[in-house]
Image (cartoon, rainbow, N blue to C red):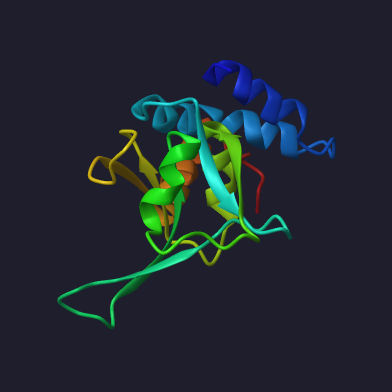
Length: 157
């Protein structure tokens, strides 16, 4: 599914509360711009039987106290074995997720610091990291640019 169709589906499936579809449409250009930087229109995400995405904690080799929590997005289902040479937990399943949905979920996934998009099948060396805080900042900028500027009424006081 192409990015425009993914965005439209996200908007169409937003709760019809009078606000959310417009909000999703307002941030869609930001999500689309990042998605265009990526090689694939969908990625595979590991999830538990409870449908929680699998979180991996990475430590800095030079400074082990520095950690970040990431979710890996794989280009093919076969690539999931790349992160676990010891074998995967049989309770985990791989699901195909449209890239726009992954980015949209990242905005609200509080414990997650980044999504690591693996871009080349068969290797973990070519990856594109999207940090949650960077994405949130870009979305905030997008929303501020789209906010209508209303003149201040002269009788405001």
